[in-house]
Length: 114
Image (cartoon, rainbow, N blue to C red):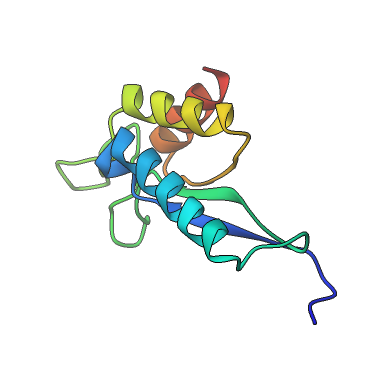
């Protein structure tokens, strides 16, 4: 018998745009309908990746990597990030963000502000 409270974080593939929101809500509903959740198990968190890592030079930076002709890559355009974050916020989902590069962090903060 579970004596702790658990709030699982569901993964949202933000590269799919607003479809990521639908995917999370559909998965959440399937789990709830299955009876696997109860007062001790919740599904009110979502994890979003906005960029990669510095080591792989995939973190979204404001300036190019030293000696390179690129600055990493955002997983989704800033406008999409704002829409997705707003949809999850309306659903009272806690949003966990992987944002490593300064550009990705700026996009995340703008999305939270939005």
